[in-house]
Image (cartoon, rainbow, N blue to C red; front, side):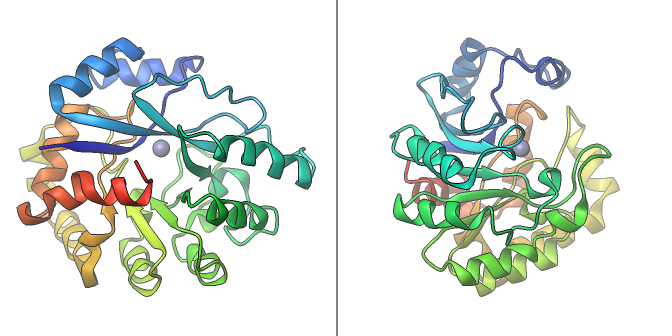
Length: 267
Ligand SMILES: [Zn+2]
């Protein structure tokens, strides 16, 4: 099976990521990632940028694509300058889109500072990926990360493709409703696990949750728009494939593991 991982992080200067990689049974190096991708049939992955547009040198290994991230260090940029910097990235063939972190930036998806970027994304035919759902640590605020906030931006910018990262988990119903209503909204399945787990026990002990997850994933054509992604280095790559393969009905594997991401991120 050919796989695209539509959501990883690669930021070697972050020690915290190295620790997470080791806990998940990996090394946090490009060589290790390349070897693992080859072994597991992963042909490409999209890095969700954790720098700011002005500081991201986009020096990612050649087998990766990236979304230019508005994580930290962009707030003080003047509007025109921010748009210029983002556009410089969007012009690059290895830049696959834009990544926003509204829950951590304490802004709604419909914030006026984001609006010019939605127009740019449409102009370059590249999607805007948005962290939706639970936030890690005390600094994230859930009200900004709720999947329902994507609805208004999706309606206002019909030419822009939006990706709800983490399928809005645990607001699965809301994420499914937003995706069903808006043709231009997609979602990835990254970050639903953390570290290494025992899959049989996990499914047994969380039967109700996984039943809900399956219900809303498949709601109203959901598998046409869901993309496999891991959130590596948070999870073990091999285990996450087994996890997603168990959740997604087999007849949709090609679409979810490969075709949908190829289409949405133009890979
Ligand atoms: Zn992530």
